[in-house]
Amino acid sequence: MTKPVDGSEVDEGNYIPVDKDKLKEDQQKELRESVDTYERECLKSYSINRSGEVVKKFDFPSLQPLTEAQRENKMIDTVYQVVGQAFIKSATVMGNTVYNTVVKTFAEGTFPGYGGQVIYSQIR
Figure 1 (cartoon, one colour):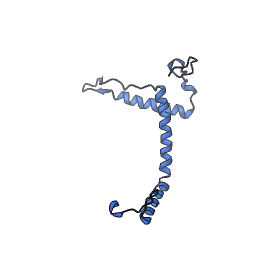
Figure 2: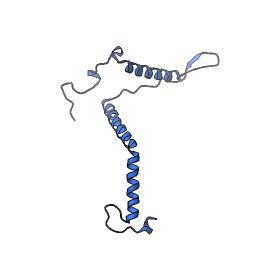
Figure 3: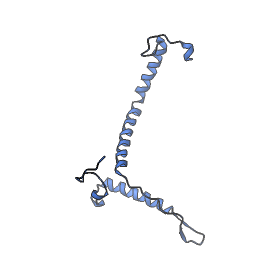
Figure 4: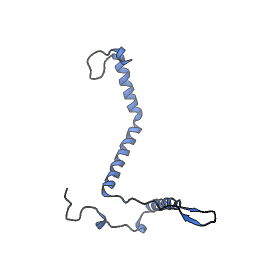
């Protein structure tokens, strides 16, 4: 696949960072929470020895910048999550449909889409 020459593809060269002062209040809160979480994880890299000296045990956890493919995957994951939630919310309806189909199959002695008789000894 060839890249467009008009600069329309997203990459680090044409990405415009957003000043955090321009974020909405809820976005600023989310950013603060994420930064605080990262800071807590970084502090786990240190310990205090018996003499009270702070010692760095290991390197800080590294942040993985999102590539464009990962951003697209995040969108796909979001769609899958929404679809999954829809299935969960309609689980009762789906469960009842499956139950009714099974009961009807055993009561009539035929499988849906199959015209012959069901031999019960093979099912049991």
